[in-house]
Amino acid sequence: MLDKLIDYLQYPFVQYALIVGVLIALCSSLIGVSLVLKRFSFIGDGLSHVAFGAMAIASVLNLTNQMIIVMPVTVVSAILLLRTGRNAKIKGDAAIAMISVGALALGYLLMNIFSTSSNLTGDVCSTLFGSTSMLTLTLTDVIVCGVISAIVVALFLIFYNKIFAVTFDESFATAVGTRSNRYNLLLAMIIAVIIVLAMNLVGSLLISALIIFPALSSMRLFKSFRSVTIFSAVLSVICAVSGIIISILAGTPVGATIVAADVGAFLICTLVGIFKK
Image 1: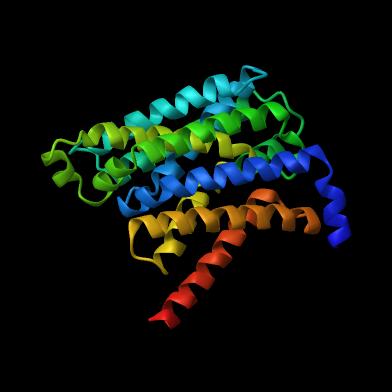
Image 2: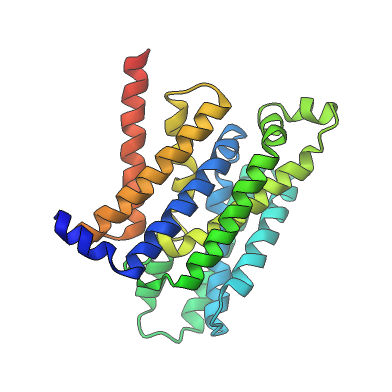
């Protein structure tokens, strides 16, 4: 089995998958802690459905670079979702449900009406749950993912204190002069970008797991924001690498295997947290 893994690691597409998986896991875990603590973790689920709808539109238009449509639409939806969620007439959870279900239904409808593929079911399944093959990742994908991930990590480190303040007590942060709306908007835009990057790896329906599980697992063991964030990042990267390696050896879907690793890690952290008390 070890020899088989070493042989596979010599292929560029496997190396690309590992690099992209690590970068996406790192970025999603950093932002995920704040989203979970702010009780806005389902924004990832909502935006992933929006990204699916945008990808369906890009497929109908036969665009070679789907990022041209998917990225702007998802980012704009994140902004609208944040604005709508603050509306007294439409609460945050209702806004997420409204946008996510509408985008998912619209995307699937468009793919059915204007389908140019002979395997529509396979295309939809691949988009929702991640590609069953890692051959879809190219060197360009790795470079784009690397640049954007570096920007995300840099923004998180630069605005760490502000994000911390907005996460724990937004009212107090606003009272002392912090522009909370700006940093909430920054978080929403960053998570939108991460979701678009992660669609090729884990699929639109499984992206929220990368955001939620590492943060929840860390909270079972640690109490401080810094400790939770650091452990969440480490755990998320370990689960991503483990999931990709297991999928290579067992021939299982990459996205589902990574999420299964995250679920397993959460159960282990929960048990350790119980005995730790």
